[in-house]
Length: 408
Image (cartoon, rainbow, N blue to C red; front, side):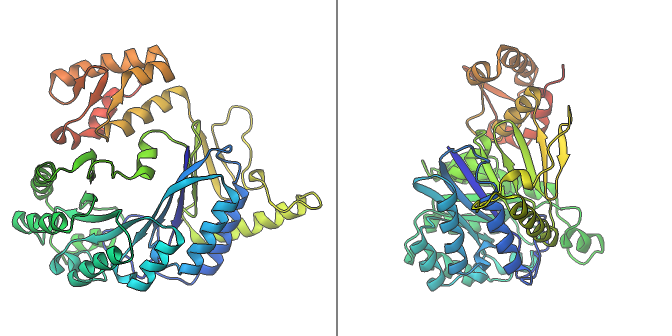
């Protein structure tokens, strides 16, 4: 079982709070799509023949791609990888890019899950966040999505906004529950170092964010979600039973996945690799590497291999830089740390029995020993062979994980 992530690095405009890699321009879109196709084909062996069960178009704004462009990418994926029956295919979308016709086209292609960046149902919040849509269009898009045949719909909401208060945040949640959507991703507003919002706050152009507002809204969110039967299955994610994001869950469960496009990450079970966060460099590198591969290809060989794109490591080097991909081989201790960090983010928690079986007794014994003071302090919970965080404890997941990390 494996997943594919495709990063589409374009937006109509850059949102003030955004820290993800994207360009507010479509000028390089055609060159990028050709480079993306080259990378997909070149890395066909990365997952070692594992069946692909999830495909996720993230960004940026993937809904800026035309139906034809998405169709070509899905066709190539099906030709290149062994795709399972009925895979989860998710596309992130911004309301300002959606229409009923477009959504019908996506559904006909086999896209079966939408993640729509609503962020708020209130215009004062949307203005603060520099979103291009208004609240009426946000609601219209959700109606269109249902008309187009989508039932697996997730929306994003942002809390801790200085333009909101407890009453307005409750009303945002009211609207979500009234819509009956199966999934919610809710994020506290945070300041990214180089974001527009950070600079605006520093210059005093917009009100600053307050940690106490985020804590208040988080408590409301957890309580309201539980009251309405939603499972808090990851720090920022809530769902109706059985409606969690299968693709995102693969990250937390250590499932192999291949990421394509600038800034995309990949994991094969033993190493991580990631692409440079630069569209122009990405396009240049894959064009050059593709020509190099063609020159090295045997007569009749149509597909370049991955070794044309990455400089192999020398001796004991753990990190290598190729024309576009950087690779880091993970030690058993690093794999332990990643397992701890990722699983603590989820309601499934750390499975000590799994850890002992898959990683060895020294890791499970160490983890349980490190956990005891945290349990005594009320910062971590344990049930049988599982270590997990409650809603209140989840806010401090990173600090708890650090105290469980390998330090021998």
